[in-house]
Image (tube, rainbow, N blue to C red):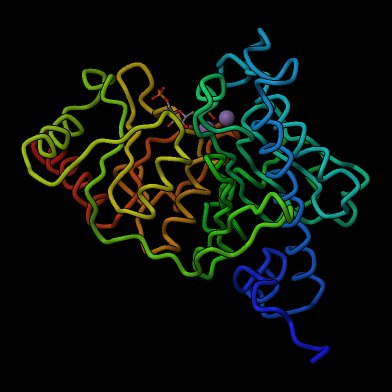
Length: 344
Ligand code: AHG
Ligand code: MN
Ligand code: MN
C-alpha cells in the first residue's frame, strides 16, 4: 500500500491561518489575496514577538525600560519598541499597507513605496500589558485593518478621524501566554489558532467562538475604586453582594478578554476622576476588541453607546471600556443609566 498515509502523520486536521482566511473570504480574488497576505504578515509579527518574549531573560536588551516616554505619556519598555518595529518591518516592501498607526508612535508610519498600491492601514498595540513583560506574565498584541480612504497627502490621517469602528475590515489579538494564540475576525465570526512552534504555523483551534451570554468574571482594577463614578462603584458593590461572581485582573487586557471570551463576564476600564476618558485607546485597543467581541455575540460599550459607533476626536483618543458577555455589559450600563436618571 504505497499511498497509505500513516495515521499518526497528522496530530489532527491542520487548518492553517492562511487557508482559513481564504476560506473565510470565499474568494481567491485580488482583495482576498491581499487580506490573506496581511493576516500572514501579522502572524509573522506575532511569531517574531513570541520568539523574543520566550528568550527575553536570555538575551541582552530585551527587558526593562528605554528611559523614554511615549506619546501617551507612559514609560516605554524595550519590548514595546522592539514589537512596534517588528510590525513595521514585516509590512515594509509588502505592497499591502500604506500606513501603520500604533499607540507607540505620535504620527502614523508611512511606507511611501507601498502607497500607490497599498490601500490598507494597520492599527495596532504592539505590546499590550507591557508591565507584565519583566515578570514573565502574559502580554498581547492587538490589531485592526481598515481601508484607507483618500490619499492622506498631509500625513494627518484625517480619514481615520471620520470613521467609526464599524469600518474595520478585520481585527484581533495575539496572546503570548504559555502558548501563543491568535484570535481574529474578518466580520464573519471569531476564530482562534494556536502557534505550533515546531511547524512555525498558527493552527486552527476553534471556529465561530461564541461568548457566554453571562459569566462569573468581573475584571477591573479595583485600586481605582474611589476614582470611579458612583455608578461603577454601585456595580462593584452589586457583584460583591451577589453570589457567583469572581474577580480576575491580569494587567494585560488581551489576557483578560481572552478569559472572558471563553468563560463569560465583563472587563471594565472606566474613566477615573483624573482621566475621565479612561486609559485605553480607541483605535488600537478598544475598537478592535469591540469588533471581535461583538462578532462573538458579546457587547462593548463606553457606558452609553456601542464602542463601534464612536468616532475618534484624535488619533490617540481614549475611551472608557465595558466589554464582554451581553448581559453583564448591559448590567453595568443599567447602573450608569440609573445614576444619570437620578441626577437629571
Ligand atoms: P499597554 O501596555 O498597551 O499600555 O496597555 C496596558 C493596559 C491594559 O492592557 C491593562 O488592562 C491596563 O492597561 C492596566 O492598567 P492599570 O495598571 O491602570 O490597571
Ligand atoms: Mn494596551
Ligand atoms: Mn501597548
